[in-house]
Image 1 (cartoon, rainbow, N blue to C red):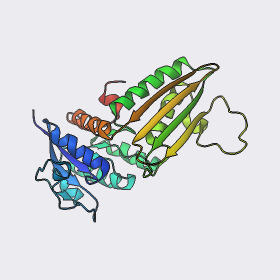
Image 2 (cartoon, helix red, strand yellow):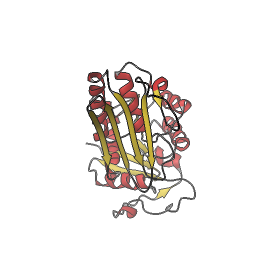
Image 3 (tube, rainbow, N blue to C red):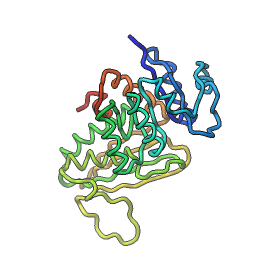
Length: 268
């Protein structure tokens, strides 16, 4: 089997390093390029060396050249950077796995448009475990569709710039869809002061930011006399990296189309 040629965006960052590690250990993949932004401290360094496995691929700020050498780009950067990389992928026919969160409606539209020409996996969370949780939430919401209040609590490290997390929002979307609601019409993103009695059709969100929390998500179905909690806790970024590489392999035989991790895992 021909090895999958992987390019990694944001290679010098926390997630980038984890992606380097899993890619270099995958016998069916090869690191084609390691990309970081201009001025990044590790430019010119051997990408493998920073994770203990020198590989001869140097970290570069030349996104165009790096993506041109790859069959798939994995991108966990920022929305503006990812959208630039997306257009380069489109020009070169390179598949892309997008783990970046925080896109606005226009950004999501750009991703959908690019997917008409290239294969794209775009998911708020690449962890296999989290995507199993999405499936469980769908089942739970359909069963507990009356008499239960739904609240979503998420916690992340102090450096995360968007809130609620993309994963928490996706959890809300899964529950809302199962209940026949629109999340935009029933979500409550914070409570303060005299808020009045809770409206039964709402889905509440609470956000915690602090320290080095990788990612905790918990969905509560609160009824009378009982509470069901479905959650996921990540102790490292490894699940996201492993899921992303699995998504890259999934795209290897695709010509174009927009997919998410439910497609990758066969959970549709």
